[in-house]
Image 1 (cartoon, rainbow, N blue to C red):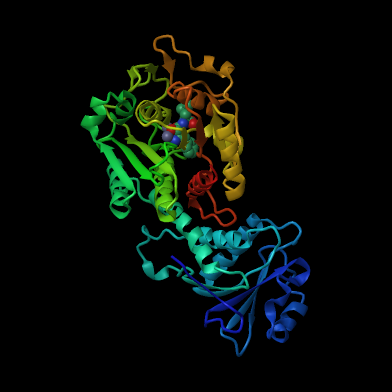
Image 2: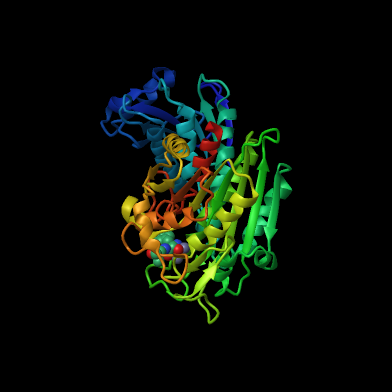
Length: 488
Ligand code: BES
Ligand code: ZN
Ligand code: ZN
């Protein structure tokens, strides 16, 4: 958590550094930023070492100030600047602070017409100011994070606005922590505990968790099939956030909660399994969204639905070639036990449609390797039965820069899922793998319910850090959902 405050250049508190923003060509942003400091920073500006290009950081040591150092931060071309430019530049600044163990910052806010400057700056810092240290034994080597920021600005209520964005990030951090944690710790039972903890903390949150016996009673046979190879019981979690009790409007977020995906009997090879603790990223988005909504006290009704199990390998494992049926009674031939996400989501989507009166459903899942091939680690794949919902999600994606790209659900692909022995098969061959996975899900969604499927297999867990995003878990989807909910 960062403690935000606000002040003027003359009254600012002591800190580790003062951050001054510049557009390219060393144009100060704003021009009035440096009253009383021009003389001190003039040699730095005329040295030629600093040009003001985006993300450039130059440290000057200046005597007689509230801070021992002044940082010149480049923001690039002013005409080209967007909130994303600011996220990137201040993300870089934050990484620089970590390297140097600077924790208290006085930040002169840039001015830019038509931009939500504070949003971009704050989000860049909050994104980058994350560290997952739980698995480090030697805590002495750990670098401290930014803890205090005083905004220097003429703008009103900077600190309160920054606190708003920080509240939204609580869900992002929860999601990242759950995904980065050991799979042996973040089990279905642990997800239940995290959900129940939210219900204890917030009166508007209620949790229902089905244990294995209840899941059997509900005949969620597809979730149970995937669970057969695991010594850990499955869980089916429903977390309700009622922010607008007067309204019937109700958004459901379904999240894939495979706490480890070995592939099952169709075992994943070395090189494909190592990151599979991240296969519960969808459930982390669902939990994170509820936390952010509660922290922001959002006036919306949102329910998270999480089917959760490990996909392990065992003599009891469900088998390729066998046929299983789930909540709807539709029978499914298992072509590949590694296509397990769509099985557990099928039961969850069907349950949500039948029992929870959704106005719309958005599901998040690390569902296919094919989406990583198509869109890489930068863009989430989206498939939807409803143009309005898809467009709203695209818009939220632009605003948060958690961008989504829509792929079609054309009928013509459906024949790939044909089974000779059952109603449907759980794999559709190599071509259009992400689309056939989504078409499988669609079979379990009431066609009257607007539904969007977001395949986050590429975006949830990064192989290397990117812009302000750390390596590994990103928490992508939480800010997207919060923005979407705020907009509708
Ligand atoms: N969890 C994986 C998908 C995945 C791949 C997530 C890479 C993150 C990174 C999913 O359960 C899976 O294994 N899908 C298979 C489906 C195939 C057998 C039809 C895949 O994509 O290869
Ligand atoms: Zn799998
Ligand atoms: Zn999986």
